[in-house]
Length: 185
Length: 405
Image (cartoon, rainbow over all chains, first blue to last red; front, side, top):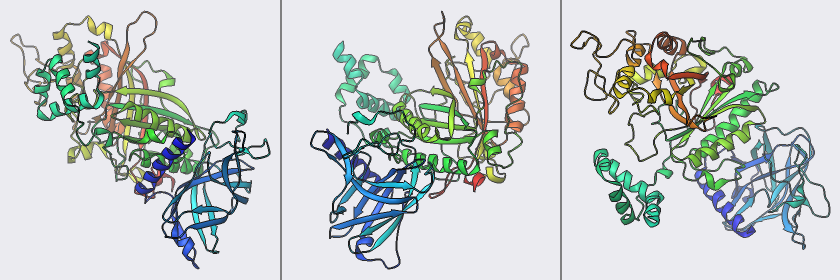
């Protein structure tokens, strides 16, 4: 079920990426652009709104080069720290999210979907409320030291309440009242 | 019987057969018996391309879509009240999000953060049209057109405040109700941080493929409704509909009134009385002095005993002004909702009209009808709202930017 839904969402996002070349998110490469930064596009980026604490950003990363590209870190003025997270089975069938080892690898000519319930950019220590309709700036740093900057609109979103590995904390839920113990991803 | 019924419900095949019929001639399709239709649909299993679901109406343009767009089969109208804390900057954020949602959904692309992306496929001519009420413009700290206010109280009105007014209008229309429902939910999920739903009205016309595109709609009285409309794409339409002033240049004024229709009372009226009440024949909408729907009515014609052929009290006669600027463009939808108590129906018309200046064009017309119109016997306005529909936008822009930037 996970595989099927992941595949469907990937296919939809790929279609969206193709159709939305003129979409909201545009990439701008920094002045001292290196090959890795130039090879990567981020389309349909968005971030989940939150008043404080933690939240996450998503989108479709595409690698237009014939070399694998690795994102090693991300920063944003909106957060004191961003972690690169993956969501995995913790061995008991429970899906948990944790920092990905070695960064996000986008295969040569391939894509990496950042989506609720999957890989995502984890915003920690928000510097100000992120309200729906705001735009946040995200800078990605690659393994060759090159960087590229994207903007992502902020949207209200009820999902993306994954559990942390080794903890019962959760993020991004500023409405309260939900029990996140039974999420089915 | 079961097999035959299943064949008749065969979705696209039946639709495609009917589409073929419509192309060949509506008369030919109408002449076929039910058996022939079922047999034909069972034989024609290969869908024709393109399916109507794939048809897209451009979102970006000088004008918003959904005004001069040939009316889709289904529409949902939502009136929203802004939360008290939403300021001008908040309105800009709201309209940026909603415009982006609309730009994507109307092109068959999921909205950002769309949790049911598959429901965005096959937009079926989806359009999303935004309108601003007086409260929205006030919150934007801009001056509103003088006509952007509730209509004067008419003697015939029995208005329910919960079906009237509002700060923000969403008109979401497509040929497929599933598409309309998904787009509505997506937009409302993104709006709810800024505004609350005040009222929702669901409307319908004949399904896609039942009649040829451009056919004047029929309301639930069986009347051909909207014959006198100016034709989109003509200078006449442009003059009636498009406002040219300030932040509204390229926009229009919308009047949305929920008109309850007393179908039980209408049932007591014979066919002649029904035709006299409007001044048109029921079978094709022709004026009682003509033969075809678009024949010009002759208000001077009299019967053998000297009475006007088109009665003075008829809806058509009363709505017609010698002042040709007092004209509107109608784009109405029917409604039919569960009845209360012992009634068997609760039905009516979501009257929608677009005009450059509501006070100059719509209000005098409505005043004449309120003063005298035989149709008032069977119709009651129970909701009413006026909105300013701003112009369209270009890629990178958003609906409302002329007001908010």
